[in-house]
Image (cartoon, rainbow, N blue to C red):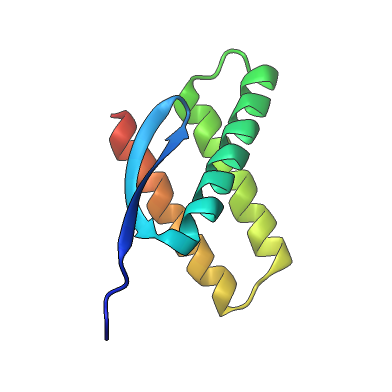
Length: 96
């Protein structure tokens, strides 16, 4: 199996930079996902002013996971859920 060339990009989530190396075709999608996450986090921050950033990130992640689960309950949905859980763990590790 040949390795595709990876490009460097940075996604900012919750005010923190996360450098990534991904296929060039994925950069736009990753940046778009970062924007959606930040929008959802800001939404939760505006509603729950007493919650910290980690809580708002977790609520955003839960929202995306629930949306995904409702729209696609196939194996493909399970793969995305696993990826979301992995992203949640990476965010948790980065914030601690």
